[in-house]
Amino acid sequence: MRGPPPKIVRRLAIAPLVLLFCLAVLAFSPLLLTGALVFDLVRRGGWGGTRFAAFALGFVVTEAGMIVALFLLWLASGFGLLLQARGLRSAHYALMRGWLRCLSWAAIRLLGLRIEIVDRAAPRPGPILVFGRHAGPGNSLMMTSTLMLAYRRRPRVVMIADLQWDPVVDVMCHRLPSLFIERSQRFVEAIGDLARGMDDDEALVLYPEGHDFTEKLRLRAIAHLRKEGHLAAAEAAEEMERVLPPRHKGPLAAILAAPEADVVMFAHTTLEELGTLRHLYRRLPLTRPVKACYWRIPAAEVPHEQEPLIAWLFDWWKTIDDWIEEHALET
Image (cartoon, rainbow, N blue to C red; front, side, top):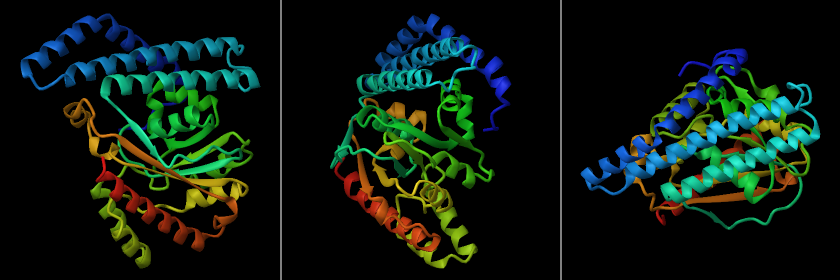
């Protein structure tokens, strides 16, 4: 996918076009649902098409509603002049929670999604840095939903710039503390800036792997480590079959910028198995739960120097890999 166009194009062209597309889809929703229902009846293969179409329409409704709501908040802010005011920032977080609740409800009711958090940790105050594996559709939404809805955290998320093609993600995350990065961009300093000055109810979210897991990317990453002479890291990566080797520069920048923050490691199963939208459709309704686990490491136990941090990250990623292997067999 090509990188997103400039901000003015996204605001004046992309967002209105997406809104018009959503309204057009809603206008034809009776036909779309009827077509999906007939398709499922002819195929006699379950109700996957109807479920998928209904979820897509639910997504379209929330997308259109969010675009309108974000525009109204922009008007209420004095055409953007007061967007950073405390009350308006709180309104954006409340809107984001409502959006996540709607998407979660639709995924549970229509797709059959179930998320089981293993050994759920009791919430404690204090800023946290969340480092998670990156695999499968919905990974970031699941992480953000858990932080905002279950733990009442306000996330600061590091994400790829391509997500700015979605007007809701684009507008919301440019108004709240977040960071979009290009694949080739030097972003270490920006991650440090984003992590600095967090309040007790905030969390920075970062995916050290940099990409969704695939076996092809795993083998490529191992070959790159060997080519660069990082033989010990390559050997450690070869022992991990379900994760990509973690990159250390982003986590180190966040840790140095927020030395008082605990680190939370995040793992999950199943999402990477869903693959493309076609694979998701064929699996509906989802019968296997997504299992997730969070480990909270006190700030005093987190390395603050490069070499110890690299070893520490690889040790944790091996723990995550072992946990996924164990719990994937249970789902």
